[in-house]
Length: 299
Image (cartoon, rainbow, N blue to C red; front, side):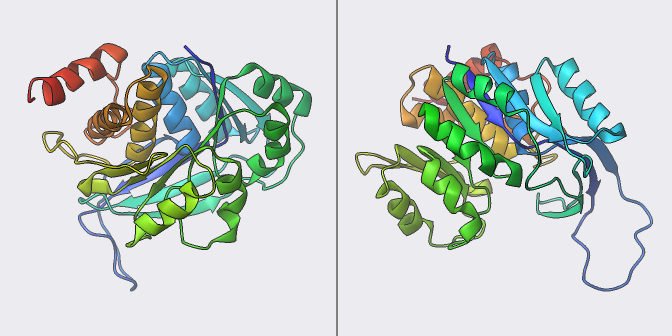
């Protein structure tokens, strides 16, 4: 199977669970369950891909601090091949407020550097050796784009809750061959997807949370996939990264776009039953069993 290089996206997060997100007024919340865990989109993708036996390496930046050590230890236990540079600003940390419907307020209590000195010789070797790059939209990864262009590697990127016209994303949209995005901030997402396809992309996938997902292919086909309602909601953190990883797993297995969407749907569905970035029991065998259960047996 092809080798994947995931560049960027590791944090240490405190996740607080509330019935409803707080109103903008002074108040005291006397009890709120919480979970502390490694987070962010690069870690989420690498964890899922590793569980699915996809050959991958994660590069990111962390601080020389307690939180960075927790990330290193957590990824090591999970079997992720993690390579990192040290950020003098320290490890990025988030506080996520989650309501019972999966809505989230993310507070960046610390944020990683947008520009810093990387071991570029090592980075060049990583880029040169991989087959596919998953480029995370965190600031420091922009300085690696010229290196990616030098070796002409296919790029997958996830724009998350993209705001139409935000110039920050343009470098990522320009370099990407395959784009994933959420419709959270785009009620009229289809024209945006079409505009990206007109720029020569291989396909664009848009996720809609509880509604499902939409893909636009190079031949102009629109493919819609609903969610699987059997998965009982616990925590939405990591669901988008799980979807992305399940889709990429299918793509590497040379599945159709329709089947890739279904495999992504399964991974995301399993993820929301867990309070971790990847479902604890996720495996290649499980995802294939779930595909058989929900799609083959129901034909």
